[in-house]
Image 1 (tube, rainbow, N blue to C red):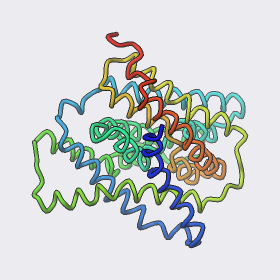
Image 2 (cartoon, one colour):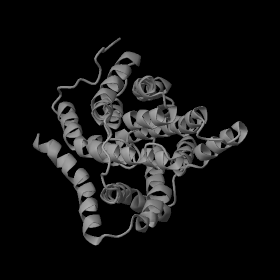
Image 3 (spheres, one colour):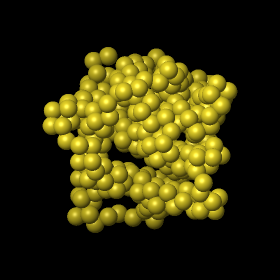
Length: 321
């Protein structure tokens, strides 16, 4: 258990430091803009490129793995979405609740914690899950809001906007370039390699610190009545379903399975608040969901890592199946 605390303490400690510093300095949320720009457009793309470009190309086409992990996410989304629609008859708010229950913080928290826990072997599964889940997320939110009548954008314009968000997202560009570099066995010149390594090492600390700042500057004003269900689905049900799906789909490398389950166990993504704010739906409660699931994840993620590291959670429930 001491080893597990050694893993999660620096990780959650950076979030806590960001939270405390933001409370002390009282800088406006807008002051975080350039830090977020650095993380999203420079540091994390450099990390994804560095790790993927050195990966054998055959490891980048595990479609059964991708489908299993993404299906687990959308099973959870569907459960919350349907339950909410049946209760409130509101597609827009049901979409945000579904995303809060299923869309984990796999961009800011995922790479750092997975690499810290399982080493560089976790880089490929993290990048694959991130890219394919986000491609679907970028499509689902505007599609559901259009269905709810909250988005009056013409269908063709909406489709082009979705494609643009997918194609131009810096993480997805970096992943595509990294895959191309792996296919061509490209090696960067030494000065460029050092620059990329420096940027990649900065990605996780900066992302986690920025996340703590963001949580501190979004005060908890309104706790959703559905919070118990959202937290249970996101932090407990989602990783269980992901584990069962990957065990049923095929025999994968243990690191790949554990990386996917860990990503599924992460708290609600900050992007859920951004989407809620964009459409003016369930905004304060989305913010509350992010804050509270992040706090609770200190215990649930620590517990999951203990199960993995102690050998209590086998990498495959159905070996040889």
